[in-house]
Image (cartoon, rainbow, N blue to C red; front, top):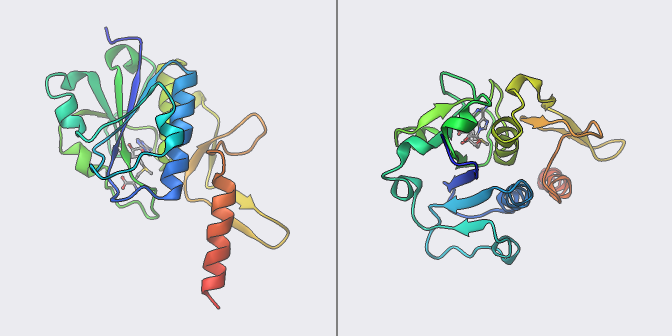
Length: 207
Ligand SMILES: C[S@@+](CC[C@H](N)C(=O)[O-])C[C@H]1O[C@@H](n2cnc3c(N)ncnc32)[C@H](O)[C@@H]1O
């Protein structure tokens, strides 16, 4: 039987920590803490400056070691959330595993399968359904399944939602999100503003 305290570990695979990832990691850290779980960012470059806001959360740890080294003698405790896995995550997986591993990769469209870098390490994999999620959504959904015991197909989702900024401006997100009680996609604090700024910049760059 796996430990009741769950650890969500994001193996950082991008060279830097961009503002999107920072907001995603902050959301994962806050939600993990509220759910009595731990959040670890692994494989960080030694020169990496962890933002103070993250460092301040007691359930958060920053690691320069990679997940292979951290769980070298405990591989069977670790479940890799893998869009290409043969079976989907189920509430019973919460009894089998206590560490859930995610790729610290920004979503891309079409997906480039960078999760394959983690697949090579030989951890058992589970899929969260057929649609690509952002990393914070993937952690949120995993928590709802393994800690909340909600089957994957009972979670309310919003696929490829359109974010409307004003009458003329909107953007469609190429990901699956959890649908919040307000009917909107659940996103990290500050993310909508960042997306709006990024889309304004993309429009400015056209001129
Ligand atoms: C934004 S996704 C990256 C997907 C990506 N395009 C790739 O290159 O693999 C970040 C992480 O969230 C998790 N993830 C996202 N959607 C998933 C799904 N449908 N099933 C399982 N894991 C998923 C995986 O751990 C993945 O590495």
